[in-house]
Image (cartoon, rainbow, N blue to C red):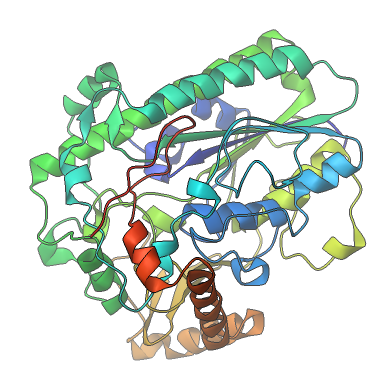
Length: 481
């Protein structure tokens, strides 16, 4: 495989139904063209369905329980080497533009330059989420009811991110040595607001409703029930309210596609397309009301599944790859893509090269996602192989889905005697990777220590919560519950 430039584009909270190339309703012609000239990974997953820990996992190539960046109060601080460190240390030009959700400007995250980065609030993030047993309810109904057309600091920020991406390619794209650029957008993350023209486009269409959106069909698993109670999502929203939110979300997806298209167009006009591998993915998905949930956090595919597209030299064209992949695969993939050497310390990392996966026949493989953050009392773990998804919950019943016959996860097979052996085999496979109870205890201990280090529970509660990390230059809107 020849070394070449690598443009890594990351978005926030982009579920697969928000891309046309995945069969979704959203108009995303630029990402669709990227998939046409490359490979679409159809079984791709986040390693944690919430922003901060999965971005640390993506950077370090480690599962969350290995890196111990557990939740939105544990931002990546550069203490574990990242792929950015590896490239910079070998003399490659590696920069970032846009959202990082890392710690602070003072920490060395491995980039040569960070252009208008978005960090966690106050360098520490959402510590209130560390109160796992009796954290205050987060009331999300208002943000859902306010979905619609307009402008937001996130839309403004992503226009600037695209501007910076174009400018960076113009300034650095023609270097002789391969470079790597991480271009990170914040859309379509809430607020559920999109440009008026895109809202009108979707509001006038009969948008498909998400699975199990009606309260009578909501799954009754205790962990899922707790999510809905914690975020004040009872009772079910009216259908017209959900449709308004869908129009705003898909409008934000199309807006995002426009910004990515601007950057890919400049890549082409500079004559760099044939000399650059492009990877597109998102940090996690979005429920959009499926199962009565809005946002991420769950192990259902709306939340844990992500789009993943790669194109460029040595990448199969027009290919749909079904081998399971996850975001930790980006670490070895980007290092290999630019021609950097591997480190002995990285030999045991769980990720695999996406280039090797794409260029070989679909294969059996298991990927892991885990969750230890806000609205969860105990750890949750997902294993996904070529056919089954197994969800293990500490202190709650497991779930098992046959993703081949039931891709919408409507029939939980965990209690079916005919699948008892499959359920047992999945749990054994999980325990070969980790001890779920031990990891749960480790996460809770680290979170308790973080609360104490930042002044104790009373101080954390007094600090309050905020809905979304502010764009650069914007103050966080704290509120008490």
